[in-house]
Length: 430
Image (tube, rainbow, N blue to C red; front, side, top):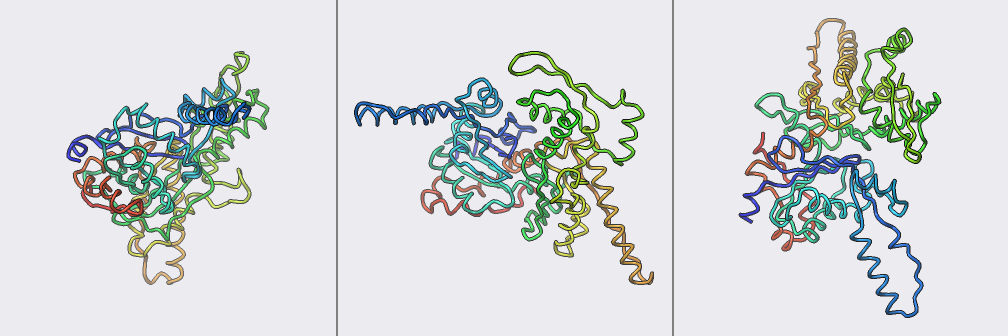
């Protein structure tokens, strides 16, 4: 145990789209890989033809062993599935929740042994979870970590709390604020007061990074751009990450593009996966229309029409009244889909508009006798938004208090997986 506490803890942030992993104390993760597993299904689906029962059992056993060994994760999984039809992709996390525990275990195995190349018995682990995860999910995670990997200790931190810890701009870490976590598969707006999540006020919306990619893909298809169908989603994702930005006014932006198309329209060049022939296509309005789905969601789907700024305002208004000013003052962005240029400026302006309109209406009701104090709205943006949760975990797992807050292997063996249901919030880092 003493040896494990002298080594840096392993920090793994599993997201729907990407997983960030590395060691505590580092400023950035060692690896950022897509959260995907390619499994060779040919072993599992092989025909059961055999002369005797014993040889059939042996064949089945060997197939099971090979299936357990023959898999890939991340970029390697994506390229393997393209080149070999026997490999099928599995996405273990959907909408922020673990959906396939078998694939998740395989994924962790590769993260620990192939990427981080460490012995799990010699390290404490800090894993992250969605604010809406069920306690049973923590138990499953604890079982896998202690039973399969025999880790020295385990702590499961709530992602928004870590993002808040990463978002501080002064030497004092402000642990009251709203975290707007926009990942690939889920968007959560989570109020945190003094390091504790206000569970009843959490809001989530059905629009995230993957939806922006789908919308960019749809716009390019509708315009008739010649992108190979099998490559269109990947091209749309790269276009989103490279060229998309947030505009201040959608009508003005359309006019700008129409007046000076040469200035705003970009060219995308690629090669067809099957033939290797080069192709090119234009990138036009989707550059600003992609991120616009967060501010005008009706352009993408008709069944959800509440803009993200209104959701953030509702979230704060449903929090205890004595925390609201502090929450407006510290709105922290987290997740790759908040990295669009000027995203934080547009968000701050729109929230401020909603808040100011409410104060004006309140003053009008009182007939001007008492003036309400203006509310400061501040959206915090920083360069590490993309891996803010991981960085927060790195900071947290670097403190001596982290090791005392962890569940140890000895505790697990004595009390069972139920100890993983609760993870204390500790103040050592604040």
